[in-house]
Amino acid sequence: MATHLITGAGSGIGAAVARRLHERGDDLLLFSRDAGRGKEIAADFPGARTLVGDLATPDRLSWALSHQTLPDRLDSLLHFAGVVELGQIGELTTRTWTGQLNVNLVAPAELTRLFLPQLRAAKGQVIFVNSGAGLNAHAMWGAYAASKHGLKALADALRQEERPNGVRVTSVYPGRTATPMQAKVHRQEGKEYDAPRWIDPESVATTILTALDLPRDAEINDLTVRPGR
Image (cartoon, rainbow, N blue to C red; front, side, top):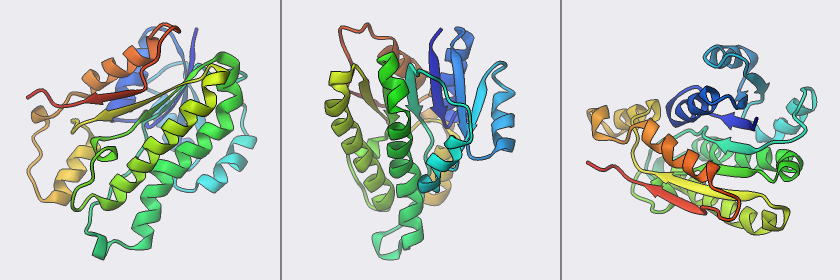
C-alpha cells in the first residue's frame, strides 16, 4: 500500500486525486491549515490521517510537524494547495505578494525539504501542480505567475538534485480548470463563470495519476493540460 501526503485535498484537483487514491486503497495523509479543517476533509476519506500546518507561515512548518507523528516513508508528496490574487503590478501590496509567494512557493519548498528523508527511503515522487501561469505571465497575473514560475524553478532544481536518490519530480501545468479557485478568478476578472467551459478536475487527476503510476524505468518531468473545447 502506497502512502501519499496531499496538500489542498479539500477541493478541486486535490480532492479528485485524493478520492481516486483512496478508492484504490492507498494510505492518505491530508495536510490542513488547522485541526478543524483537517477533520472536515478527513471525513470524506475514511481511514485517512491528517497533518496540521499553515502554509501561509512556512517558517512555522518545521515546528508544527515536530509535534506530530510522521510516516517513516512516503511514496509521494502532492502539492495542490494554492492561492491567487489578481492585480496590476502598480497596485499590488507587499502583503499580496508575500501571501502568494508563501503559499504557492516557499511552503512547497519547505514541506518538500522536511519530507525528503521519507521520500528518499521510498524512492518516491514529488508532484507540483503548477499552472499555465507558471509558463506564461499576463497582465493582472504578475504576483501569481511569479510564484508559479518560481515553483517551476524549484521543481527543475529538485529533479536534478534528487535523481541520484531515486526521487522523481513532476510539474503539472493545468489550464483553466473548473474549481473553486477558478470561480474566484472569474469574480476578480469581472466575468461570468461557466464551469462546463473549463477542464474537469477529474481529467487533470487522470494525468497526475498517469505520472504517479509510471513504471520506474521512466519519469514525466513536465505535463501540460489544456481545455479541449
